[in-house]
Length: 454
Image (cartoon, rainbow, N blue to C red; front, side, top):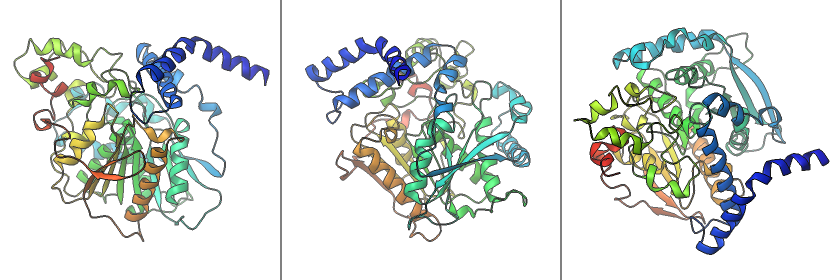
């Protein structure tokens, strides 16, 4: 007990000035968003300071720091967690599929910037974890399965850091959840994560006969993830569709990172009400929009800028040459025909907000159902703050979507875009929620015209 108090004191003491300044600002000038309590203002200030620090140190160090609590991450009370390994045969099958898909888009190892087919990390086991409720209630339905892909900018996070999410979804959706320890950048950048997620999907469809795992009907599988895991969810779903595989029953993205080109206005406009580093998770900030803007003055076209030799590598996850690949930035996908039902949930206060809005708007006429929910005042992946009413509401709506789209559910066919108040009330999204988005999509930083104004 005494040692725990000492440890807590050592961690909190350097943060005292931040706590004091945040408290003073909250009461003197008001919170960043009207509904934020002092508890939430302080929570986000501490989280922002930690994540900014992660973005300032070498990536290897930030990865170690982000997983400091892994060993102590408990299995939630009432849950059963079981280790699993995705067989090598499925990873090889996924590699063959990805090779064909990338070839169709004219993407080779040169554009990718690495020899992805000979990644030494791919020889290591692809680990996963099953999560389910210890006691099944009336909501639970045998066979209903969620493939969960954790967030963390494609270079942070793990199964254990996201047990809060897998347990919530197992409990509220009445499902078994399999979460995946997919390979992380920069050691294993794109397409490693998509290949691994595809491997897990193939494993669910056709597990080895001696594995003890029962094959899952794709109509009973929902793929979901948060942040980068949300972007990976949509990238994987598109790869599944393009490969001619049976698509899942549905996909869900919580604050999905759909645009690694950082083309939308909220990346800059919402930095004061979010905890992500200003201008996003780029490589130590070297690919920040203001730095890119300097290059915009010297080039003649947007395409030239994205592929200019003087442009630093912006993201850990993917080389500049493939940032506009549909499996990297699903926002650029022009045709969602053949996709499954989709639910996108984002916060109005977060930097990635506009990506979700535009993803819904540009695909408003596609035949698959696409539902968008934007929660007032909420920052990035607000579902993890379980003391917020909006977090509980979003989790319940996600669970309801899963029960509807899987076998035995009533299905979803309606397209909708709503804002959700802090009291859970719905109101229609305004038509001009993101002005001028058509000219920005697929262009680095939104294009030269935008960058030159920074």
